[in-house]
Length: 90
Image (cartoon, rainbow, N blue to C red; front, side, top):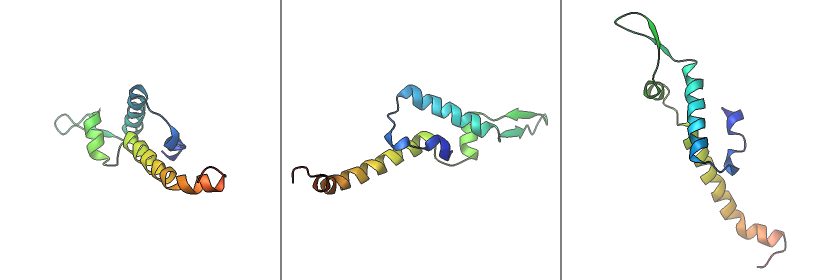
C-alpha cells in the first residue's frame, strides 16, 4: 500500500475517489480472502464486511485523511518560521 499512499497528504479526495479507493482496497484484500463454507465445504468469496473484520487494519481512506491532518499540522507549525526565512512580513 505504500505505493498507493505516496503523496496522499496533498490529495483532495472527492466522494467518487473515496469510493474507488475502497473498491481497490477490497479487491486487494479479496485476493487473500476466501473461506470454506462449514456446511457445504465449498470455497466462497468473503463479503466486504467479513474482509474488514478479518483484516482489522484501518481503511485506506482513513489513513489518507489522518496523514493529511498530520501534514496540515506540520504546515501550521511551520507558518511563522517559513515567513521569517523567506523574507515575508514579520
